[in-house]
Length: 518
Image (cartoon, rainbow, N blue to C red):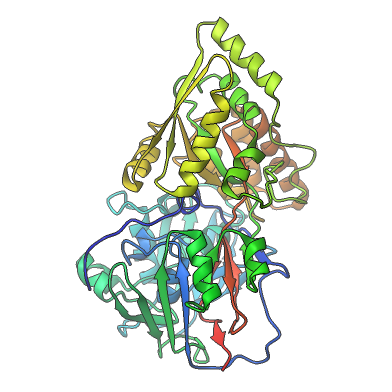
């Protein structure tokens, strides 16, 4: 396999990767997509065009969403479990997950007789090895915040008893999103090069061949735990960072499916489309640790100064341009009466003038990832803000590594990120907003917000959850840690010959259910 690396990504992929949501539902027009084409047919090959190829095949260094590595990871490693659109657990390699005390002490039971593709057993000790590795800072996994909550693990055969550092009532959501992919410990102990050449998992497919910047060919795994699956003999994955070209490839017959941004246009061109309904969305994260955004008035002023729908129109000319009005998904009971800050030029200018009169005019730099969509977004925001008095905005476009570094080190002033609460929002919100969480990009510290986040995380009853999450929504609008400008727009578009498409969690996608009509 060639070792030349390319960095292809979309800003939406970065956002999801950095602040992944847990247990969020995903659906097409009729929920998790099921078609009426009759019983699945076995055999054949399908081609799907992704936004980017993985830099590594190590599951600790991949992310489980459409924008990054969902197809690759779920093919090679399968899923311990997954969440459906209503937040209900569906089991894969695992057969049960239970808590004995409301979310602190847990037991994960694996199916009997599981084997990795190298013949070694997939048992509880293998899960412990993988989860401990995810939490190791030397590994550098983006799943570390989730794995770091696990403080103690005791494996016994196919059973893993583990404890968390704080009660999380729906920890299954964290597993589905960030702790789901288990690789062979023996293979992981080898070199990075040897693992990338021959990754060893227990998923529905094994790596057939892969040339960097070229197709990745996955072959059916005959040792998969469900002997009737996968239905496909072969799955071919290609990559293209341009959303228009991806859609054109599917339309022309160059692929059976591809990741699309323009859902309405894709449907007009004869595709079926499924996309996650996550709430939250892509947002510009304010860094409250440093000027000017250490003053809440500066954050509120920018949030009110930007016409988010005008920004969206620059990204999707002629398309829908409705900016999110709430933190949670439309229709969620967790929204209550709370809304996000609205576009108000007069109110924004008043705050800018107030800050300038105190000797603190608003000057800052927006950091962008190197994608067409990312650059258009920040340039549109810059253009709007520079029309106000007492505001000066610069833009910097960094390569992927530099932008990620600035995010991790929290040296930005305003940067694109994401927050996706989903149907079980407790852990996603805690990791993204709590003052002690390493995933809190904004650095906003507020006792009332911390208390509401902890209450929602541990809540067992729906009434208690609703009260806590509505309070989080109210405080999010008041404290303005970020400016949400669009929901998650990436979806999967496919032609009629492909069947069995099923999204789960934070835009993950199963591949063992896919099949093609003959």
